[in-house]
Length: 413
Image 1 (tube, rainbow, N blue to C red):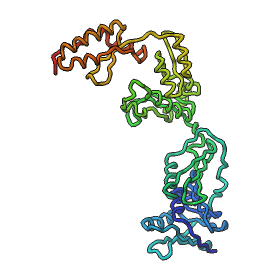
Image 2: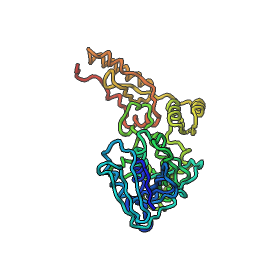
Image 3: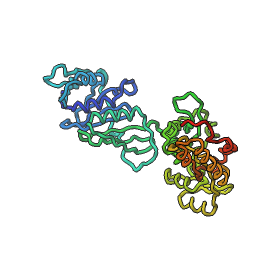
Image 4: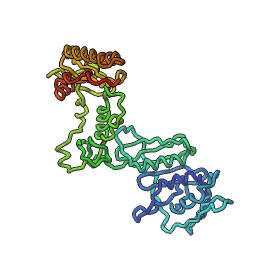
């Protein structure tokens, strides 16, 4: 029996993207494009592409080896305005011809040497479900989906609908130039948690330095934990204008396959559901605690001396600090230039802050006749907005710093 059908060239190109590159005896003919049940179909075993063809009876069945289809596509790649090709096939000789009649070199003959068989592709199309869990797809297959989209129209957009962790996801092509074009994509692994996962906290992935692994109970928790840690790290209102590498996404925190034994993973397991209820940061400052909760929608530990509470809301923060008032901490602002950013130097008390600021203002007027007033005005007493631990650590590292700080040096103006 002989068949002759018209097929949009764009659908032939899309089908070649989804078909298998090399075949094996077990999965024969997956390196082909099939015309079956009124559709053009292609699969490599993990992605299935299928599109309804107009005026093609359901009983027409043949396959086109991918190598021949790709050869035809290359021949016609530079021919603009060509939308359809004609495909003829003789079932007895298993030979066929892909062509655009009356166009120079726009043809490719082909022959099928193996028995013409193809998987029952309609049986693998999953029914849509209400599944909302975690699903991982291979990046190389997501790229294939994007490549297929580019063939289906300039504004075509894929809509991927998972049906289960170990089941195929249905793909609709929104705004496609063709009707009834769909695909099915299998997850990257039948069980993403069959491997062991972790969150890496350390140098950038491209660095050679050692990294710290935090064992995670599942792939989903590893991704969620990495996202939470990144947001928490880059949160710092005091440095909100800092756009350094550390504050640009913290991409050196990332989920990864566990690098170690199964026993070590179990012993060091840290990222569990319970971990997400534990705060990543602690503040003894009402304003900072509230900013953290609002920015990250996450819990925070509030503390004053040896008292603490895990706050889940702004109300929790206000209640704790109203019941446990925190003594104010002070610092002296000594900027590098009169109009430059503040540089706060913690001091033990407000009384010392007043003495330091008064002395430095007098020294500025004395040492710098021309700009002394501007420098003196820039020296201010500020309430410390950081944590008490940061305040104490600065004083520990810089004891009596104020005794060595002076403007009485040779004038530069």
